[in-house]
Length: 221
Image 1 (cartoon, rainbow, N blue to C red):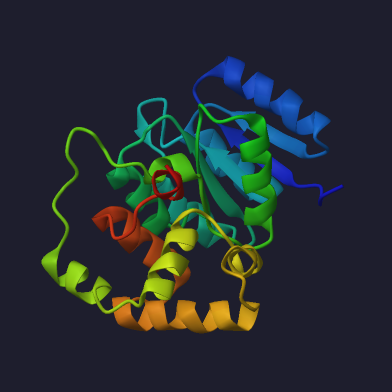
Image 2: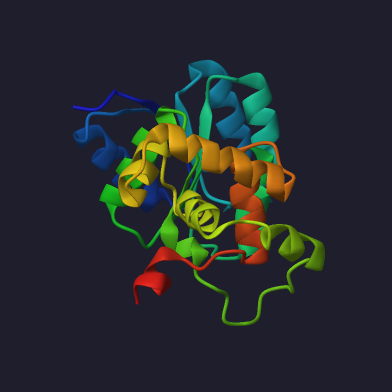
């Protein structure tokens, strides 16, 4: 069984809170609080110092993403997972830049959420893959400077970037590419240098915002 996680849930849909509390409990985790507004979230997080806070991008008409930096500053051991129906690339980027370690769509199955929680607890940044689909209404045009930087990526580095944006960790990337973890780390370091960023999180945010790679399911299709 995976590690037992202490979790604070925040959503303004009470039925969702009740359902998730029950499901996560049956999965072996401990929901220490389930609240519906930001004030309660902040208070419960200070009280319980949970392993993970799961929150929607908006709760009770408030911007929950804007509250993430404050939550993390007061609770450095807590990780934040955004569980939302908002498919906007802008919201995803804001969440990652605010410090969220996970981003999962509400329409996905509980197995996807449980996997994301376990991986986030291990220190990964997890973006559920359906968010990498292009927006039909027309995404904002990519920054030509960023596109130029991406042109310096080798085919293997571009494939590593695609796997990063799909939530793969070093071990999973090595298995997918048929190379060693050390080789993966070398490729990732080259990606960071060429894109002018300092972390995998920044690389994922940049690639998602500017559409630098195609989602894995589109490539497979």
